[in-house]
Length: 155
Length: 451
Image (cartoon, rainbow over all chains, first blue to last red; front, side):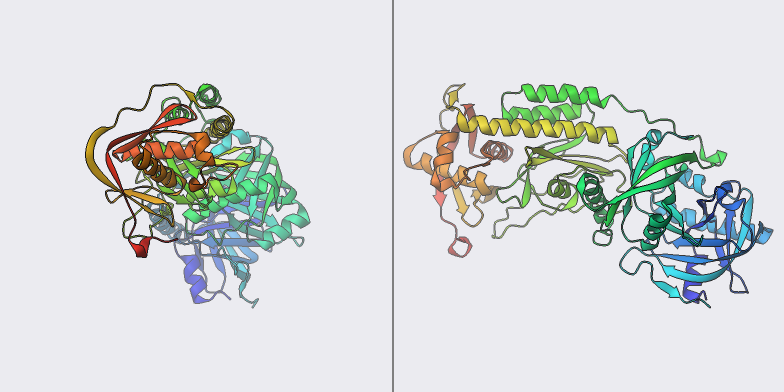
């Protein structure tokens, strides 16, 4: 259900966050460190469990997850919602993807005037995990009258 | 609460987007970027509800939200657990947030998109610091600000003690430079129609640019004037600088005066000068430093701007009620007699040009032209405020004519232009005309004469 345009968007150097029910039963937030589509039409996102334990430590397959991707240069944004298929330590290949993402998005943010020391607060590969999500629905979330419109129907 | 909200003021600057996450009744999460979280007090924040209906629906259903805020300088992150209190579509909180959102989003080219739907008030039930990698450096301590309250108290006292409106403006701007350490400062006043703001005095710019204009509603200055709310921009590096909306003249001779600019301003603070619900102008500061103006600066400037407005109101009322009182001798004798200079007035906007150079327009233009007309006709060089108010040619409104500020504008503009005519204050309610040469009053070309 993730078409090529949306797939390219979320695999690009865009800011990304995930939310899930946290350990205290409230919504909890984690910043993503890169994402990609897998062969099974799932979306994989990487995140630091060390930095975001509230959101990630208690996650289990079947949990609902929301992910929002936002391009910092023009505020274009999409939200993808789905169910967690798996969560586990990132493999070497995953770390390489996350490292590439970190390099690319950092360069863009610095170009926008963000200080490297600020970026260092947000993007850390420590205790990197891979979340694999089966998307159910995606929404356009760019600010404006079309925000919230579904861009892909459930498969 | 593990972190005091008051120590996180750097997270509430609207510079780095915040993130809001909620859960639906079915437990499905929703996560969005959010432009602005407003600090209310140690246990409350307000969120700008602009367009995310799913977030709003979830909050209405559960009463709960989680928000991630980011310190604009250090980048450190803090997660707030919020409980919804209420949504406000009007009132002071809404107006203040709408003005700030409009200023920020207009600056970033998103003005129409980011219209505020409601100001949503939340109680902060918990605030915790997000783990930060060691390489990012230590967390910011509580903000260290100079004692702005003491500085504001000293400055407002000195403003209140001033006997003369003209000198008071200098005192206020000098105080902002010397006591607060600000670099670029200006005072603007509404024009006759209230559609524009006219620069009355400035500090820290290459040119004083007295008479430069800003359209009401444009940029930080125009929004502060229109909404009568302070507007503060802390990081303008990622957006275009506010357009200053300099107005173009309608004649071949230009009456444009560019608003002075620091060139690479990163921070702006515009505070309306209001007394008894009347707008007397805008106090405006800018800096080439990011985050140059703190919340404390904003609060202090609100006090200073209020005092300036109150004094201007008092000067206007005194000038209306009191007999003229001569404080100094006659105006200087006419010098340079015989050297003619051409004075042209365009009726449609009362703009006055001397030897082809634009001087001033509006009420100040009418005043100048009629002073000179009387001088040419009768040799008069002294005029009382009272007679100006009664002179039908000057068409001053019966109430709230702002004559004092018009005279200040005229005096400063003539001085800045090194014009061959000046006005001097001879005492309360009494001004004198100093003329260096022979004014030759000209009619404008017929096609440009207007009404």
